[in-house]
Amino acid sequence: MAPIKVGILGYGFASKSFHLPFIRALPSSYTVTAILQRAEAPSDPSSAAKGSHCTVDFPDIKHYRKAEDFFADAEIDFVVVATHADTHALFAEQAMRAGKNVIVDKPFARSTAEADSVIKVAKETGRIVTCFQNRRWDGDFLTLRALLENSMLGTPVEAIIHYDFDRAPWLHRMTAKEYTPGSGHLYGLGTHSLDQAFTLFGRPAHVTAFLRSQRAVENPDAPSAVEDSFTVILQYGGPQKDLLVTVKTAVVSPMDKQLKYWIRGTKSSYTKCQQRSTCPQEESISANLAPTDADFAREDDRFRGTLASYEQVDEKIQSFDEASQRWVGRVPNVRGRWMGLYENVAGYIRGEGELEVKVEDVRDVLRCIELARESSEKGMTVAWR
Image 1: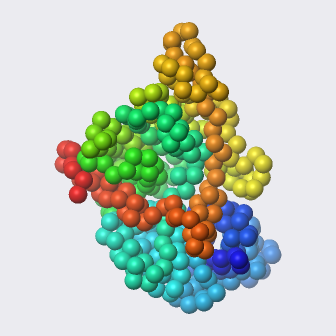
Image 2: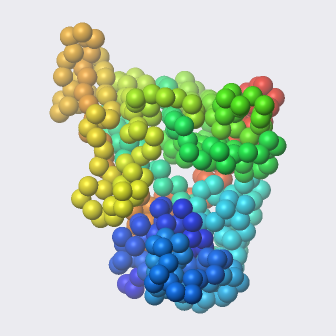
Image 3: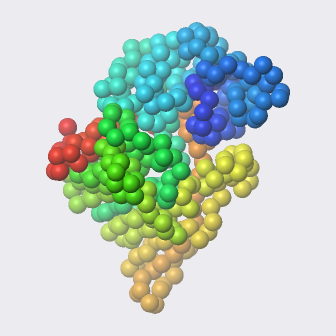
């Protein structure tokens, strides 16, 4: 089948680092035909700095400066929305009304009301819409998911999911003091780790949250209602009534190894630290490696997770530890593969398989964020509704 013709909305960091490298690594599935970048093209692209403009990096594709011209391009089959969060829902709806399938960078929308509107347009137009929840294809998450699916942990009773960022370089841009929908790190890093929690365990029965501004600790004269750090506790019902899931982000945490996952089950427990302050795929992109390179997303073995149990559950990696009187082993990490998201979407567009990231599930994550803010403001646990 002919490659799906892609149009990219926006040409900032997200497009250049998170979307284009993985789309272009699948030439049999996709070809980039147009990019919307409002900035005027340089008069002499050959003399301009690489990365400064889409016409410099991709001289053979179409460049649009106006959204209406971009959406009017009948050649574009599939739109990638990689603009500011306040335009995500708007552009997704415009793309579908123009007859195009669409993937939206996270956060999918700034509220459940916006998400519901996008879902309604998808049903009206018959177009496909999904969200770029790429962290489902992180290596450490794929490893954890495999452990759970293979019953290596037994029945999960407690899970702690961290996404910490020591001295985050983008904190200086968080200057707003008043909260507006879509701002704060629950909509930033939180949409990743909450999505992982929902993917593994589903929708909770109750939400308890504590939102904090750790940057204000160092600058008490600049308090802010826009959180950079948070703790969200998810309590479940029914068969999962004994399960407790905690999702955390902190931006002041100078540790050699940042905790990523700590899952306790009836058979064993699993702990995993993240590689430095980012993930192997981000580090590979920063090092200008292509997703098809042999060393792409390779993780240092010292960051392997640890599987511990009273009885041996994996004879290939576990050995008996006399000091702890437990069976302990270091779990080889699955190689991360964000390409898998785009492979899944291409297959679904062509009528093959099931779509992994369903917008109804993404909408539930946004609802969880809204309930978390309500819980923090009221100082109480709130029921899912």
